[in-house]
Amino acid sequence: MTDTAARPAARPLAVVVLAAGQGTRMRSRTAKVLHPIAGLPMIAHVLATARALEPVRLAVVVRHERDAVAAAVTAAAPEALLVDQDEVPGTGRAVEQALAALAGFDGDVLVLNGDVPLLDASTLEPLLAAGAAAEAVVLSARMADPSGYGRIVRDAAGGLDRIVEHRDATGDERRIDEINAGVYLFRTAGLGEALAALEAANDQGERYLTDVIVALKRSGRAVAAILAADPAVTAGVNDRAQLADVQRRVNAAVVLRWQLAGVTVQDPATTWIDATVELAEDVEIRPGTQLLGATVIARDAVVGPDTTLVDCEVGEGARLNRVDATLAVVGAGAQVGPWSYLRPGTRLGADGKIGTFVETKNVVIGDGSKVPHLSYVGDAEVGERSNIGAGTITANYDGVAKHRTLVGSAVRTGSHNVFVAPVTIGDGAYTGAGTVVRKDVPAGALAVNVAPQRNMEGWVESHRPGTDAAVTAAHRQDAPGEDADLE
Ligand code: UD1
Ligand code: CA
Image 1: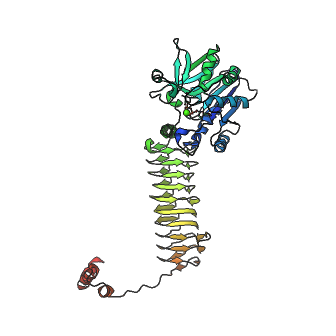
Image 2: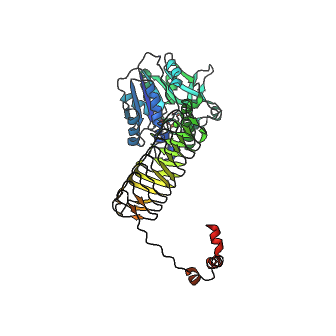
Image 3: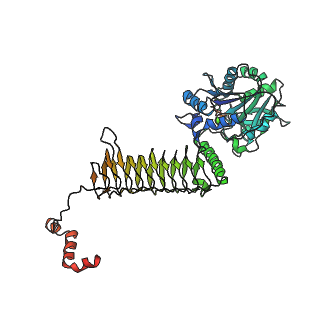
């Protein structure tokens, strides 16, 4: 989450984001910093916070899944300098290489972990301010459950003494509830030296950035730990459970933002809205709804329950109930659902309808036109005010190529039609129930091609004697008067 913060310090600021680690605890083929949070890769959230500080330099250290991470970094922060970490592991090594890549930079260096995505610029303000009085400042937080984090060990005077990793900590140290948030402010002078002297004397055999603090303190420099006002924003993501926690928090913030902007969200707990979505005032979101990607929803639209929209555009006052849609446009006042599947390229006009158990793909359905029931309509164009009968299929694929079906305006097609594309049905035409439309239908014509019905009297009695059908039919024949009652 981002906001802007004026920077009080006079020295120029560089931000270094660490994103080279393997993220082993995620047990994922996807790099940890690329796992999405509210529709954006984790690293994009960290970069948004970094950019809000308006640093003169921004560097991101990469290694694991290098190209994929680099692409996400460049998308979120085109100005960022990509720094490739070598095979020497550890957060200390990562910063050392970033510092070398920022050749000649002289000022304050803010280091952010790429897996601490909730951190906002306002939390960083006190840290940046403290940089005026100390050579190194680390952001700390009190955690109800500090396990897994590095612990802040304070000296008798209450000052920062050192940081010990959970895995290297003694039982007493593990009881410390003040943790290292993975956010540090250093001055370039002194940092390089301390990094060069770093050893890897720990359980993981890595060069820990946290040991730089001790080194600086031992060399007589002032170091400090500043408590974050809100510990929740310092949560690190190391595994999928922590990822889900962070996703829930970001989602809650996005939902709240839209509620305050005039959107009714009936059930925030089951509503998921990506940070990239745009909603207008008086939109109503019902339970179990996911609004993802570049989805935009206009005023007075009602979406849900149980609806997923990916990159969709929904017009004013439209209603979508139990819909799954991707890259679809729904016009103003249109109705979709319940139980509709809109695939990419679906465009439904104003006041149109796509109804129950209907699948659409790559189709333009004009204003006021309806596909109400049990149909598949793809690679097609339907004009205005037309009605497509229940159970209609556009047979668009001949096994080799896709073909288009063109339906004019004010057309009435019967139930259970097959449109064998390529085929055109003219304006104002009708088709009979069960028609397999293989040839173009001229405007105003009625197309039928179902064979005349033949009733073979007595067939059941002669071919299925003794069955329930035969007995029941015989009974009805005996009492013809009942038929008349049923008319
Ligand atoms: C780190 C801190 C720990 C702190 C926690 C906060 C160290 C040694 N420990 O632990 O004190 O409480 O963050 O969340 O720093 N990275 C690199 N190169 C590497 C190794 C890691 O760029 O060689 C990056 C990772 O991609 C990640 C960040 O540094 O974004 C932190 O690494 P991680 O392994 O998650 O450290 P933690 O064990 O969480
Ligand atoms: Ca971490």
